[in-house]
Length: 324
Image 1 (cartoon, rainbow, N blue to C red):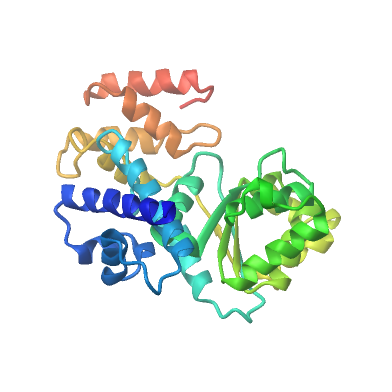
Image 2: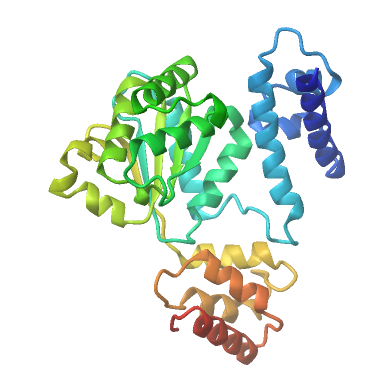
């Protein structure tokens, strides 16, 4: 069966990644919890599929492979630094949300942060680690304030093919509710600031009708809208339905950690020559300062000399339309 072949191929890809790092099976499943137990992964790898839900196993393996591909294809130091503030904060919030009792009304996490601060990267890390327990969708401008479009995107994220999704809003809502009740999931909605009042009311309905958790990744403008009178019906998301609200900011400690992570050949806490560079970049001021800005500077950096660093920073800042 093709499913069996696909599962074995995915498991073998993961095993190759572990072998390349000389990881024992115990370390592999610790790094990628979506794989389940050592026995479960070994069975998938070796083609022993009896008594397993293969749809779930395949989804979990695919999530792990997706994260492995990001890590494998990155240039040295450009993988995912899981100890950065934004990644760590969102990880802890989602772990807490997953552990929340399904009867609790407070099952919404609102994660605020300017563009490029690390919200999407942090969320993808969680999906890669925890697989089918977490699904992620993007609320782009096409979704906007159209509940039907929102529900269609959600159903695709939950694993439905476009051919299997009904056309009507009521039918789509019913299918989403059924899927989210069949297995408790945590739904991460990226770019949630694109959602309008009706789409946010649809999220509120899903929270009321299902036991899962919902995470809204957004820039601060969404929070302001949710606090306005025009969004009165959706305000439950930020009152009695709110599990946690976290705000991600670019801090100096994170900048320094990011520099060391991305370019350990140049930056080291023990090297005095690295300290001026860290301080210059940590103190840089520009609209929406973010990790993407830090990344651009580090990629362009060719010298640790103070003058060269300041020139590089000024040039990158000028191109991105900001100021020091």
